[in-house]
Length: 180
Image (tube, rainbow, N blue to C red; front, side):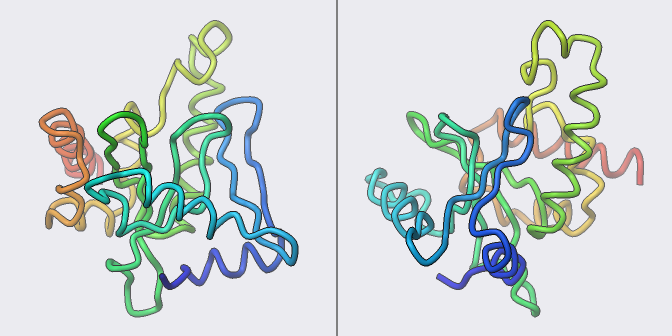
């Protein structure tokens, strides 16, 4: 699968990365001269599902120690090759929620999420559970107009977790209409 151009640049400079490891980390798999976790992790995720739910995704990172991943959707790339990003829950039946229209927008939205999380009144007691990403952050995702359009057009419907996922997508759309 084609790799998003921003991910190519990130991997060329960093090889791997971990953001906010002590809070609700977002780690990028290691890709360098010695290790290619993109290849091994994607093979494992794609083989692990009989229905091949995630075969359309290129998994590039995730939360440490959890089967929660971030993946691009190459089939939905724009003219410049930038790909939307989904948050994948690979437990049990598996599903994905759209979280950004591009990798760049993911980092922007995720940084805004971290700011809200540490300012949340329950953060000291509950940690990341005080404001889970992306389930409790539709207002942040709604800032990404292109993502909202892709959601409205139904590009992510087949990966949503049933009615709960459709309701969540509706909250993202509503938040966009209410605030932008």
